[in-house]
Image (cartoon, rainbow, N blue to C red; front, top):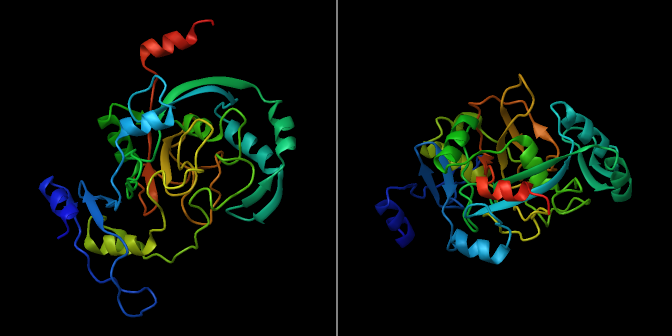
Length: 314
């Protein structure tokens, strides 16, 4: 057992022992690419090789905490109007400004958007003020930590509640990603696989191997499928507000703003060849759905004193 594994064992964290992995193509087995730990008997996380950065250190370096609690980013501005039925309308108009497609069929990846045309179109939309706090990174919200995966919506909501936070609404998540200019990507108008962890090749998965999720068989399958990175590994994968890894890496649970709809909405896409833009939402999965590329990040209301101060005329 490595010194890091021994320390985690003393802390009560279950760390899976490395075992030979069978090749999906039937070839000879190989050693796992990553060291994994099992959390709460269901969720998985890669053990970081590099020291995980303390949130206070990150806050000081980033300068985006504002009046939020440690490790969070203060988001304030005006979002393109996000009423209960506006998601599809705004996204459809934005797609119409795509000038170069990777593929137009599902999942419709756009290589480049017409910036000037989008600015003209988006100027016609009403806007609504937004002011809230959001985790800087995917949970557990630390630079150089790997995100938790195999988490369903109910579990994600409970994890945020333990932190005295909540799941972001899909509107909050979208605004934190796109900023006041409603950018298609958190870094701009052109798709860039070097900026964020996106467009990795699709890998065949064995769904039955992932369940029950806490087994060594599941760990083996996750090691085969994983193509993500540690939080903050790519400095350019940063939104206008300073929130990292919002597109790509892992899908993130949010809460629907559409009345009467199931609450469980995924945002951001994952490392694979999917949309991975700020606006699109995946609305197909129920609250108990979990999969190998799903994680979360949390939001919170502005502290009362800070919110009151922000509402005063200046």
